[in-house]
Image: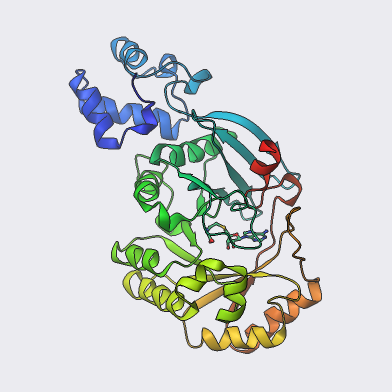
Length: 353
Ligand code: SAH
């Protein structure tokens, strides 16, 4: 059986169609239908010859749903919608595994896709729902792209995705072989044409992975999930840190900044009584001293199975002000999608339990 169209790298797709007799420009027309005009339905591709349209039906599988039957390998298992314009999809792959992806909208007209890179996660951060059932497998390049096209299709025909955050399920640095080619298509002019600077990859902070990304000289932004000012707290809530320590994480992030010129964002979840004191804010500022960095504070989003609590707003503000007082640039991320289990592996758990 042949593979769905999204499973082909751009060159492979061109090769496959050209060996079926297509001129190259026709391949470009097909890509425009798929990526810009959001359809893979041959009958709608009016600028393609009848023969080409018939070939598409012969060359690619026709087993999926509706217009996109030849494009995707997954099935849409659930869609949920929050009052704030957030939408979340649950995709099921042919092996029965499921991942989630989220569309976030804000008042600046940003339409952001939040993508998963793995089924489950091996990192076992104590506050996160994604790793509760352990790691299952990496997603393929096609499965990552499918999340993007499915979210893009939720938008009205005239709107498209403007940003990507790789902050869904999984650890991106453990699946760069699939992620980077998927992002290349997301950002290419004949793909989804999303600006390179509008793509952020978030990592648990594996120094090897970050250095590998630095060596690739990627045009994307890097976000590092720091979540603690020292090894004592970081080891306790992020067991992966025991393998390398916080200094190694920060110096790898420095290497990314040096190689790419992209300012690194440090994410910091605020967990009540664990990492939210003013003293910890001061120590965090010391660690990041004189760096061109920004700290993104994320009040913890409660997960049913876990005992952590979100600090009250006054404590969040105190932490932010203390960091600012030490000269650190701070953003407090208002988390969207709480009402639809949009955070971190929660929808998948609900739907699979
Ligand atoms: N593995 C990557 C990307 C996935 S998580 C990483 O660790 O960065 C994306 C962000 O959401 C991370 O900063 C993660 O620590 C955070 N996160 C996980 N669970 C959360 C929760 N319950 N509330 C708030 N943020 C959470």
